[in-house]
Amino acid sequence: MNPADQPTPNTENPSVHIQAVTAEQILDSRGFPTVEVGLTLDDGTTHAASAPAGASTGAFEAVELRDGGTAHSGRGVLHAVAGIIDEIQPALIDQSWSSLSDVDHAMRALDGTPNLARLGANAVVAVSIATARAFAAQSEQPLHRWIASLTGSAELMPVPHFNVLNGGAHASNDLDFQEFMIAPVGASSEAEAVQTGAEIYHALAARIRAEYGTTGLGDEGGFAPALSNPEAALDLLMAAITDAGYTPGLQDVAIAIDPAANGFYDGAGQYRLNGQTITREQLATYYTTLLANYPLRSIEDGFAEDDHEGWKLLFTQAGDHTQLVGDDLFVTDAARITDGAIQGYANAALIKPNQIGTVTDTLAAIAAARQNRMAGMVSHRSGETGDTFIADLVVGTGVGQIKSGAPARGERVAKYNRLTHIEATTSGLAYGLGTDRQGKRS
Image (tube, rainbow, N blue to C red; front, side):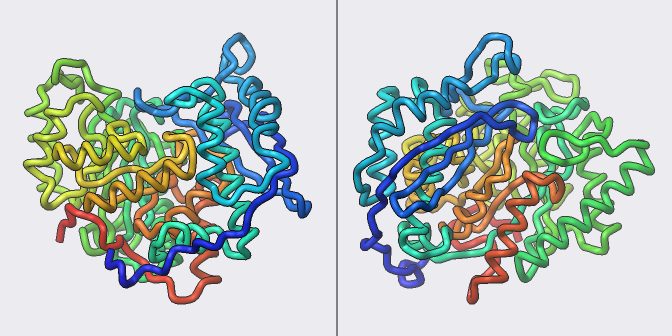
């Protein structure tokens, strides 16, 4: 990104005086508990936020606090709620805070662990997001504009990557790969991109209904038919894109995949894919074959988080023409992203606020990717709520890409609807992938 195109960071943020912090246990989109927070300021306004949760999680993520026991299969969050009320609230109230980073650092110090294991990343991230909303409100700016001012970023409407076919940990079929996405790279606006995604989604539903007799869904709203190999899924996507009147291709509607290779890694450089055990070298060759046969623009977590040799291998073979995204590899950690850039593991980083625990650390991860000329993609989790923070985050930081599941189900479309609302109510916002990325295929 050209620094000349960026607004000057806002260094005159009004302070925030927190009067109360409330919290309660709510259900996420998979029916498991999560944390919702309300932050009340001395002017009487309240700013809310809720934490998502992942089903496919990396070993290096910040740690959620769960209750254990029998209620909700041990996944209750009443201890996290109690920690907010009994510990975080006393630490934050009755004083003025001049920056979000001060609040986030105070919570990290209060927790006292490197991965937020004591208070829980689910508790801390919800308070952090609510605090970001409070600062935006106090500065009388929309959240996305406040984020742009805070980070010195040029706002940009992102290309959505709709997860329309689910496998892996997100579905009960035999697909080893977790996500198959469509990306309307050729759209001229966010509204057109969302329309494109919705039309292809419905065309895909009709084709699946005709061929499989059912349109059951995975965790993220994508369909989960009885597919057993990636080629069958990709062929289905190609047909649905055409059925909807679009052209499968890197200039119109591209395809992206998230194999989530942790889920089929056997260890020692071997993977269990399509019923066979293959080496990392064979898996890399398999990816290059898919790249040759389909309009794939992005591969996320193509290798396991600790199979660095596999990451290097694919980066050498495809990193100059394909986006290779680290999720479990990087877990939204600035230091891990920087190391990955130096080592040549990937050219893009997935960004999930709850994966690192605070908004401040999330922005640091985006900055690290940008400083290392890596692309970014802001992401939801499989266990979502109606919170739309990531929509404002992706626009405000201008990273140019977001994934929030299928264009269906309330917790998914809430993010896409927020994006189209931002576009409709904010003048001068361009749509596209941005300029930070490497690995563009043309």
